[in-house]
Length: 254
Image (cartoon, rainbow, N blue to C red; front, side, top):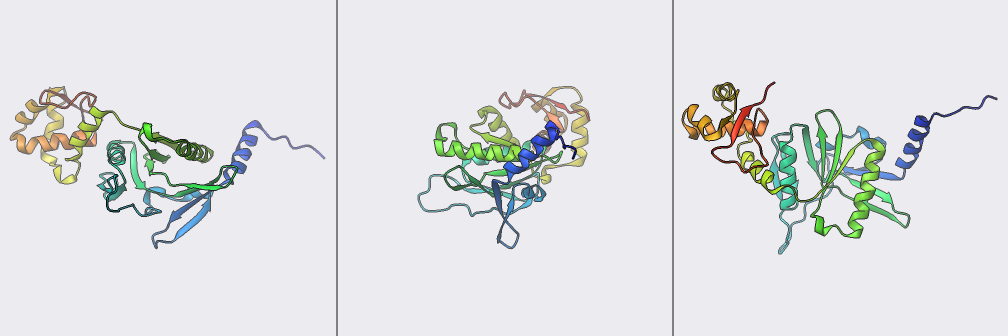
């Protein structure tokens, strides 16, 4: 009988499939019931659209801040459990590569060699190219050994099925402050088609922010449109420098 020789790529794929069976995913269905599937089967689930697998903690005297963020990417609300999570959720919403976001998307069950443990990531994002991204948010100084083990297990699970995994700490303060300002103008109500077209034509070459607002008419009407276009990525400026009246703004060529 002829011997079947497995290629290196096929062997690696088979090994990953076997390893993936050591994990399971539990997620909430629209009816509120939790369903558990194998890690490979989880690829078929649109985690960017599932409800949270657990409720957000709210109790008297709690130190963290929970809330809801209205996402311009999805048109719906996404929950967060700290200001740091809120800031990263905002930055994800601002990222043009992110198509949709969900919070507390699933429970990852995994065997650490002593017992079965579980971990709930903070967010799941779907990129515009279809890639799934699993995200945990934690201040760098507050990552304890047990947390690090859970994050590492989550990263290994993601690698087995082709998801990205991101462990996020404190973001750049200046960028965050700038994006937070622009986020105030993210809603479509800030869009003015007539002014949008005029702004993009005017800003074909870089121009100071306030000068552009004045040339477009009443700054009270034109500046919200400029900020909205900056949020949408139709205009650009250097967000690593604090926004000011003299910040150079230019249209993005499409």
